[in-house]
Image (cartoon, rainbow, N blue to C red; front, side, top):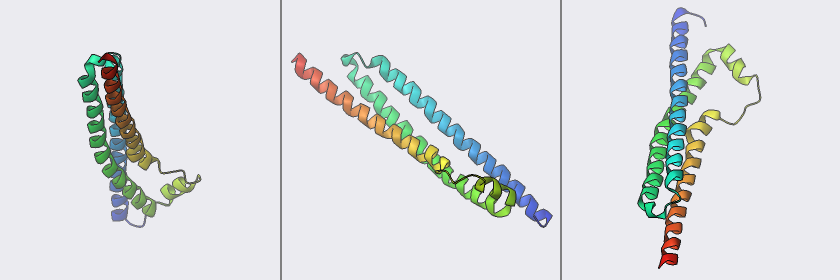
Length: 142
């Protein structure tokens, strides 16, 4: 860094990047906790076919929460990646740190997009199972 203005900009960029990265990981943790709670609740009502609407509601709620968290997290992930790229351009040390190991798959994108996508697929599959199972139980009873 050649002058104090450039140093100040880098420090501001570093703080912003740290904040964005921390917020991203906090949102992923919130997603994991919410998914765990919804799955535990679904497990509690799973055995009782009479609670069909509760099972459907939990699956739909799981889908909606996942969609909401995924959209905000994906946006934040793109911003975090942009900040990291800017830091890399300004700091040879940070660039060296990132290049010191072979480039792994993009962890930020995995956390922000792939993990919620897997939850979406899981909730959709559970919703289908709940509906099909309920229809099958109704056919046996009648």
